[in-house]
Length: 268
Ligand code: NAP
Image (cartoon, rainbow, N blue to C red; front, side, top):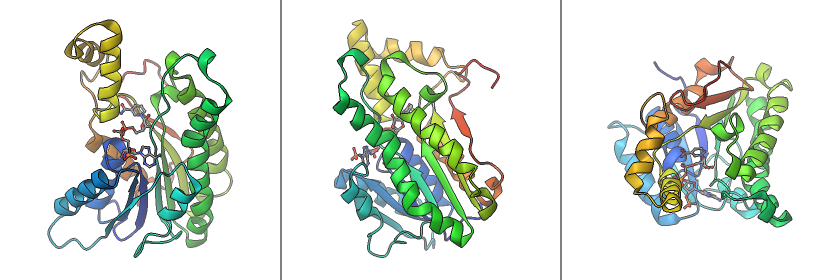
């Protein structure tokens, strides 16, 4: 299927690794011009070089990088100032940043909450604010926020994530229905269950250490609990993201798309 977005401009946050990288890759392979952002310059350049090499021979789409912390105002400004980039005339925005740490809410003070809200709620909202009206004026826009299956099935120790991402989810639900779809702009959230990324590996290692069991045992237990019998891959996450960004998904907005190998047990 031709997704119909070749030549468009995308900004993908948290794109040097994991799910953001999967999204950048899928868009780049569709011929989209991509601005990839992450804090660590070295990993980002390596990831971008890998994507440039993976494109079909003769592909002319740009793959640009910006080493920036998207949770800061200066970092977000840098996204729109990349030489040769689209400025704020972005067609596709994929918001993403690291998730907040696990813990017990009794230990969290206001500053801890504000950091989580900044990273996983207010940063995506600021990026949407900077781009959405331009998308509507040009008649095409796709916004995909990488959130978490924890929005649908909260995980007790991830209270910061449950709270901050639910705030973003409520905000997006309202904004998506504010007349933007009629102007060609959709907003959706993509909810990962368990995907094989560095973050998941770190979480599994922490669980193994806590349980005093080998990593392989914990990995096996968690895989077995997923109907698909495995963790997802960044590549398949990226493919779903690219579809949501495609011309074919113009009637799909304000949704929370769960990709979890069937782990969530409900009908809806
Ligand atoms: P990952 O493998 O650790 O990759 C995170 C990416 O984001 C890296 O490129 C990282 O690069 C970048 N990043 C982190 N903080 C950033 C910041 N402030 N500004 C710019 N870039 C930043 O993580 P992942 O597994 O892909 O997870 C992505 C998101 O999905 C996270 O919010 C995570 O909580 C959520 N999630 C993941 C899973 C899963 O199974 N993997 C499940 C549920 C939810 P730098 O560190 O160099 O900046």
